[in-house]
Amino acid sequence: MTITEKILAAHAGKEEVVPGELINARVDLVLANDITAPIAIREFERIGAERVFDPDRIAFIPDHFAPQKDIKAAEQCKLLRDFSHKNQLSLYFEVGRMGVEHALLPEQGLVLPGDLVIGADSHTCTYGALGAFATGVGSTDVAAAMATGQCWFKVPESMKFIYYGKLNPWVGGKDLILHTIGDIGVDGALYRAMEFEGETIRSLPMHGRLTMCNMAIEAGGKSGIIVPDEITEDYVKTRAKRPYRFYNSDSNATYVDIREYDCSRIEPLVACPHLPSNVRPAKEVTDITIDQVVIGSCTNGRLEDLREAAMVIKGRKVNPNVRMIVIPATQWIYREAMKEGLLEVFIEAEAVVSTPTCGPCLGGHMGILAKGERAIATTNRNFVGRMGHPESEVYLSNPAVAAASAVFGRIALPEELGI
Image (cartoon, rainbow, N blue to C red; front, side, top):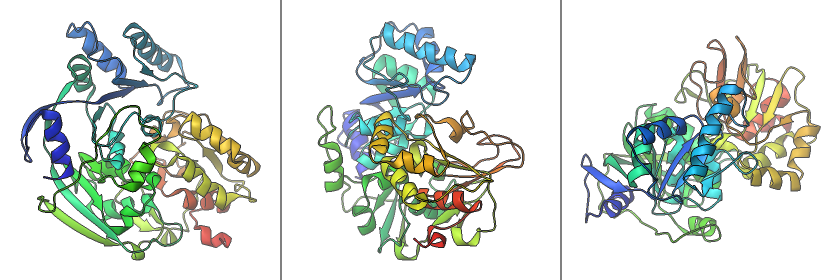
């Protein structure tokens, strides 16, 4: 079996499972945010459930429209808080303690290798970077799981993606996953587990792995996953709040498709409007002027991402025709970036630094685009109207390209700054 099939079989209490099989499986963690949890709460109450299955296994994180941007957002967030208090949820994260959910939970050691995690947010697939099966579900599934501790699944087929070769300068996990999505398309892995492996992955730091698995959904994937190794162990051993287990894939496991990529041929990439699969080398789109730069989100708001952006923009200024918004993904990242002087670098460059929030990624707040405006962002989606007006445009890139673009006022490469 593949790692995905092994994890699902273990949580279903079965010796083995096969793709296409329908199973009920116990979940290790249930996640929802200020947009999706209110629906789950209403359904939970509608079915007459009196208590959650485990108050230590349900995470409620207000991060999309928080800090509360208007009255409606405040009402949504209050619903989470009231339900959490009533049910004594230990994993309710209020503003000031919260972060962007998919950055916060791994950082806090709340998702672990071998886990089965569901979340009412499509980018729940991020946690596959730790060797967990993690996938987004609807709010009604979350409601049922909050009551029973179980969820139903159709066992997905698995695709294997093998990466080899040395990475070029300023190329990281974001470029690898953009290259992959550009190759297979936004439905190329529809309802499949995307398993990433190879020598390049084995040397890829955890933040790069999290970025790759985060965007598996952008290829239609049911999940993204990486077999855990020493890098995984180093990341989780000091964080883990409970025991965990490493699973692997058998050498004779079946994959519906296998792709190989020579990473030495991959350069910094940009996904152009209006699909994450509309990928071009950054050097081919340097004529595109921009109005806004966003560095943050569950895709690239980690400390390493901020370091990369700061390295590019240090001692320089944001172009006077551009606004640059930097959003550390969690409170811990915010504090560490402050200690390291990264926030000072951004502020000296005349960027603005926000408290942790999803904010502009979903067109929520903290950086909405007007008609005709363009942004380059380290976020994960660039659909029509994703960051604001339907006639605005979003380009996706890694943090280094985004920071260089802020300096030039157009899509640019760090090497144009002589670094």
